Length: 176
Ligand code: NI
Image 1 (tube, rainbow, N blue to C red):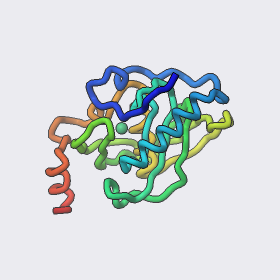
Image 2: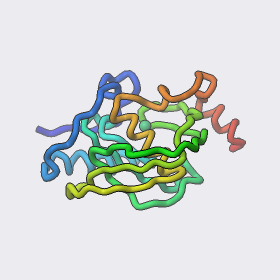
Image 3: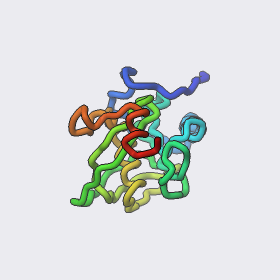
């Protein structure tokens, strides 16, 4: 069966489902899903992506912070695939910062999240890894993790006053 991957957007029921755990790490379909996620994330200048966003209800995400036109101040990191991720702990310290989402076009939001998160996940080879993420990569992880439990950043804003159109977002950050 050929599956045509595309970024799905808010309103699509797949974004509101809890994604299933990956059980077969050697499955050829899984590799195809991950390469489609890499491709769509890069094409759309994303810094992270979750499998449900490409229509695949599996617990897979990519965290790939890098500076680009959507996130000019993002730190550079090696793109990391996280499978069946679990949150082990989060810092008490929280920070409010801007988020956007390929599945929520034209909208930015101010979202409060933990500044540090320790996560346990499996890599593509099925090896279990524990990692501490801090700052923007921690924010990306928590944003993508929400996609795996049927949420988006729209569920995390304190009020609708924290949601901005792209135009008002650029005005708010002083970009034009
Ligand atoms: Ni998103």
